[in-house]
Amino acid sequence: MTKSFIIFFIIISQTLFAQNPYPQDYFRNPLDVTLVLSGTFAELRSNHFHSGLDIKTQQREGLKVYTAASGYISRIKISHWGYGKALYISHPNGYTTVYAHLQKFAPKIEAYIKKLQYEKESFEIEVFPKMTELLVNTEEVIAYSGNTGGSGGPHLHFEIRDNKERPINPMLFGIDIKDNRQPMIIGLYAYPIGLDSHVNDNNVKTKLRIVPTNNGDYTAEAINAYGKIGFGIVTYDQQDLAANKNGVSNMQTFYNGNKNFELNFKRFSFSETKHLNRLIDYSHFKEEKSRIQKLFVEQNNPLSMYNNIVDNGYIIVEDSTASVYKLRVSDFKGNNTWLTIPISGKKNNDIKSQPRQTTEHFIYADQSNTLEKDNISVYFPSNTFYDDFFIDFNVENDTLTLHENTVPAQKYFTINFDISRYLEQDKDKLFIARKVGYKDFVAYSSTKRKGNILSSSTKTLGTYTLATDVDGPKITPINFQDGKWLSKYRYLKVKITDEISGVKNYRATINGKWILMEYDAKKNSLVYDFNDNIILETKNNLKIIVTDNVGNSSTFEATFFRK
Image 1 (tube, rainbow, N blue to C red):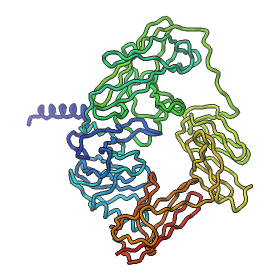
Image 2 (tube, rainbow, N blue to C red; image 1 turned 60 degrees about the vertical axis):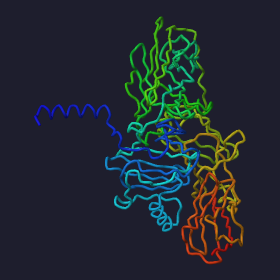
Image 3 (cartoon, rainbow, N blue to C red; image 1 turned 180 degrees about the vertical axis):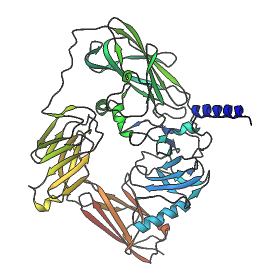
């Protein structure tokens, strides 16, 4: 091979790699059904970007889940919430695939993890098998689809991560979804920045009317504007075979023909996912339940998804000018939707800026802050918030008013209640709770006690109070009664609930031996599988102890017979 040909080959290879750096046809569809999505990669969720594809499983559980490529199982995690039952497979090419919300694992994996669960006497578990322990081949059945953890319905959550544990859109690897539909734009907002800026004679966020055109694009009403302006949109995408309103893949803006902003949802890191709350208009979402994605980059926004940013995505509109702002929204398959905004530069010297709401307390975002009154204090570490702001802080009768949940926090802050004035016998039953909903429902906020101080770490502003829980959890058998013969039963099912502080943990035994009862927190159910082959007698004693978050315990005992 000549030297010139080798150089040519290297150049061509590098060019191809730059165009498509992700291996194609390496990973297969993890299911044997047509891929239909209920969730797309990086779409907007509460406080995070979605890290994979949510694949529909025909509204049922138990579909075979195949490994997308050969490798070894490098992590198994089972939790009450989150991913529920999840498998992580490391592959020779450096990528890791993730399969979550599983109903159960394949027999060899199920046996492996159950052995460890019985050794640790815990349903929740996380293990990292050695490279040689659980090898899997391409197209090997590794699990069955389910609805475990925080899943809102039966589906398979599927991810591909790189060697830095960053999730990447699986569609970049050739995982194909049928999609010929353009994204939809259903909301457009203008944000005047600074006291002198205005849009349609307004110095505050302004909703703009948009009109669809015949080809699926949009035109906004012509606006009069002046000064520094940003825009935000509400948008979604739909694939051909599903009605779900999913996330888009790319957004680009152009001002007078020049590109000044791009947001590309192809990869992110888990360390930055919380900053979704800096991308969206957080207060608008909390008040209107609609996520406006800002097409500009504010200070303290570390998201890595931005490209080709000019002037942080803002535009400067001069007086007596005519300009055009264009936005292109794209899905992964390249279906594009354009929005055009005609802008007339027109300065109005009579604009009155919106008065700034003030309180007695001001938060400096780059400094630590402590607020105290009566028996309650709140400590904010530096950089808890993105911006400086006046915070509403008040204490009355063991109730803390801590602003409204319209300002996003990027760090946990600590709320402390001094309970020294309470009777000693009552202190152990107290916990910190957040009031939620129009009925002020009391929701348990993770509480720790040290002496006479109760503390809770949270990222949520709002109203907090002290609450009391003196009642133990309720334990109710579902499919059996005391003294019943269960020889033909496969499962033993029990319901556990706690109305006030919530269930913290549970322990179940038969004849004094710990048994694995799988907990479904969404259904409040405990299920024991007799196929676990715990040695039983003809007459057996079942004992279940359930403890709530303040330490109240309840015990359920029953006798059953089995041959």
